[in-house]
Structure formats: structure tokens, C-alpha cells
Length: 434
DNA sequence: TCTGGGGTCCTAGGACCC
DNA sequence: TCTGGGGTCCTAGGACCC
Image 1 (cartoon, rainbow, N blue to C red):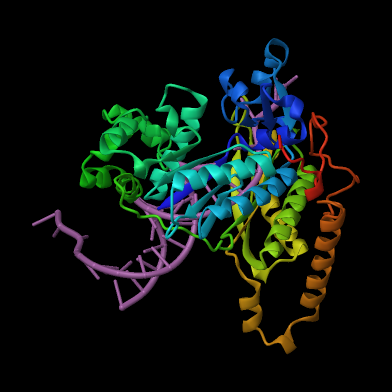
Image 2 (cartoon, rainbow, N blue to C red):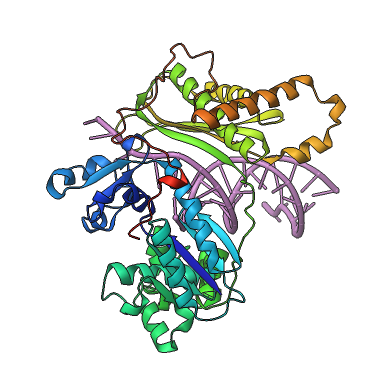
């Protein structure tokens, strides 16, 4: 048995903990450059604002509906997430942190009333952290996700589902007829693993509700859509195919990509941007104790704008695996120079580190006595760099490139953030509505 | 006229998730 | 004027081998 517990409108709820005046106010949290809405309060959802909708399209609600847009503060959300996860872990013996705002809990061997237990944990998170959550319980992860969706929807839209499923929904406890009714009332596109494209194909084939999908022929599903949808279907039937990953695996790739605040046409600012991305990616890489074997760099124009389009990427192999930001930046610049073309307005660039491996393993294969002195020096330098940035803030020191002629960014933000950033310590977190 | 067949590895691209 | 930033997994098809 699995539970899925997640924070409602997570980023928006985090902001409200520190700005209680925003309770009941329609609000969104904005991505980098204040470009898109990446979280919406219920009131903002009621205005019809979609996930990832551009801010300029909804800005008019500031005047007409009192909408508030806040610049994202991801350091804060990560911190709040850690606290929420540590309390959520109390639900059962194993936990898989699935994203910044949700975790699966393995409930094997947990005695007593699961719904009551979930309500207690939920209440504790609300009291101690100030974040409202919902819990879905079911025999498979896909059904637990579905149960969570039902718990949230039953709370937000009264009448959509039986009221006693709000906030905490245990699908395993429902009588068969109620279970069927709930699956009939849920659109197939709400299922975890069914995106817009396959959702549309299913509806076009007359498969509209989750109940319709459950009753399809397994072989037919497999032959038309493949093993992924087949697995989803089996999970919906209660056959557990996806296991709980409670030991977080190291990442297989690390990316740092950004849209620019304004179009960039020249090579030097692109070199500057790509150097910084490589440095940031290197920092993440060292954080998981890894080395990269390849660097991918890409640039592209904006698909939303008229004019000539260009999008290209290239993979640059490294002579030997490394976590040295300078080597990563050199490779990224080399790749950039090979794909850069004049005459385009670039809107986005990025660096990805590929073929990651464990630094310990790599080192074990080397004879330490023959390890080049430069490697040791590089390791020390990078460790110092990470320590300074950790202490004084991200990017206080970063890798510069020879193309850089000005001390300040030439590719960065179009405008100042709408709202200032702040950081927290445990002591700063109010006991919400105690 | 007729032009093997099976296996592996790699890569690019698609689809999905939050 | 202004359009997110990460990730994962699967598949198809090409290259190559015997």
C-alpha cells in the first residue's frame, strides 16, 4: 500500500506562510525573468490562469481582480520542502521524495486506520510548517496519485466527488461500486503517465474516463501505445508495477538552461552565459560527487517570435571525465563556437553534463601516486569556490571567459524582480495558526 | 529478375512528469 | 515588449559486426 502526500499549490503556499496577508488573494509565483506562472493559488486558478501561462497574458488581472505576481524564491521553497518531507516521513516506514512538493510513502506494516493517521500527519504539517497538503492512499503508485487528485479536487470543487474524500482519500477502502463511480467521474487525462497527446488519442478512440481505460484490452493497449501505457493500465487495475525508490539515485544528467530577458544576437554574451551555466552545472555535479564525460551545449531562437528560426545542439566529449568548472566551460564554449551562426536573435541557451560517473570510482581506477598535480589543484580550487558560494550566496564567484569584457552580465534580466528574495532559518518559520 | 539475417550499440527524438 | 527549468524512460532507425 502506498500514500502520496503533496503540498497544495506548493510555491504559492510557501509565500503565504511569510505573507499571511495574501491568504484569500489570487496570486501566482513567476519563473525566471518573471516570465511564466509556475504556481497558482486556488483563487488564481479560478480566474482561469493556466500552468506556465506567460505573465504578460494575465497581468491585466492585477487591476481587475487584485492578482499578485511574486518572483520565485527557489532557495526558500527547497528549505520548506525539507521540513515538510521530514514530517511526511512519519506516515510510514519508507519514503521516496518524488519532487520538491510530493513524496510517496510505503505503508507496509502500518497498523490501524490509515485515513486517521494521514489526517494527523497532515494537520501536523499545517500547524508546524504552514503548508496545506492532501494525501492519496491506494495499492499502487498510479492509484495513489489518482487518490491524491481526488482528495484535492473534492476539497477544491465541492460536489465533484463525495465530500468525505476531501483532503485524504483512501481508494482501497471504497466499496467496489463507489470505486467504479469515482473512476467513471475522472477524465482519463488526469492519470499519472497520460499526457496531452496520448490523452487526446484515447478520447478520440472513445476512452474518456479512467474506468474506460481500466476496461480496455491489455494487448490492444500495448500494441498501439507501448509498454508504458500498458504498465499504467495494470497499475490502475491494482497490479503494482512501479516500486518505491527510497534511496535517491545520483542524477544521470545535470542541466543548466535559461531563457534570456531579451534577444541576444552576438557571440560574446552567449559565451559569457554558457560559461556561467557550465559553472553552475559543475557545482551541482560536485554536489553529488560526480564527474562528467561529455558536455552538451545548445542555443535557440524563440519559437514564439516571427523571424528566422535556428536551434542546434552539440555534444563535446571531454578528454577525461572531470568536475572542473573551467574544463566544462572550455568544452561548452568550444561547442558553442561550432554551432553559433550570425544573424539570429537567440532567446535561450543551455549546458547539460552527460555520461556522469562517480568520482570515487574513477579515482579508484587511477594510481593515486600518478594523479597529476593539476588535478589535485583543480579539486582544491573547486572546493574553495563551492565553499565561498555556499557561504556568501550562489554566483558570488563564477567562471569567467576570455570573451567577457564587462564585469556585469550582458545577457541577463530584462527587468528587476518584482519582489525581493529572502532566506530563512528554522527560527523564522512561524507556527501557523497555532 | 534475384541481393542474408540476426544481434548489439548508439543516438535522436518523442512523450511524459513536476 | 514580455512565453520555465529542470528531469526520466522508451522507441525507432542507422551503423556495424559476423
